[in-house]
View (cartoon, rainbow, N blue to C red):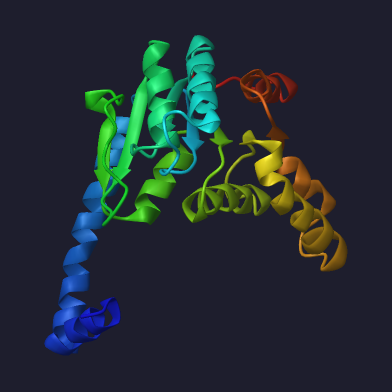
Length: 235
């Protein structure tokens, strides 16, 4: 039976009243995830969220670079928030743990790839069923974003942050793409097609993020942001 067959069967097995009733009860599950996230994350102090592929192996240069970035962030007083799973997320938590900083994992239940990594502080692991609740936690409690090479989920987080800043739904905060070679194609398309040809964004929107290559550059961008705007993380 294909996934489409399973979905069709699920709808056929339930009438519309049952579907509406289930949706109503689902609200309480969603509320519980918001409450748990707010209660736990409100106590963690200043952190940087790090995103990237769950498929990156431990010996990959991007894994090692992520670990180094997370480690250096902890030396500057920041904790690290990751998606809680393997790959880049594991590297982020591993670096935070190595630096003695707070290591937060926002894990999500998935049919593949996502199992919690062993470098998360046990009292700072939160499991989610809903992506939209988890995404809010990443943004609400982060002092900045480090975006490592990744797939659709990584792009989702990146563009979500840019959209919220562009529309002034949240205040500006540092968003750093790491890996100029990896991101070069996307950057070219944003500048040539979105900006110059179609004019779907403004020139100043390009200032919402930075692209760097090294761990020192990534950490420096976070520090420079708060210095430039005369702000301080929520220490």
